[in-house]
Image 1 (cartoon, rainbow, N blue to C red):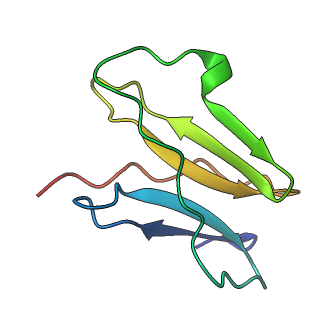
Image 2: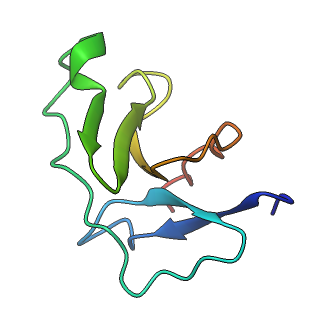
Length: 91
């Protein structure tokens, strides 16, 4: 939690991958945005494929697909959140 908002984790890690959503202070989220499809295999994702902009915000891809798994973060328009938390470890 931050004065500007909070990170909330969605997904169950099995049927839906884990992903973080930034929720600015004073906002409520009726439903969680569905993340874009997951990158396949160990392919390297180019810089231009790491951001998917929408009018309401953007999906930002973090991780390298190797030492740090890929994970998507939803960032609403008009916000600059701090760096997202690391993805949870599979257990």
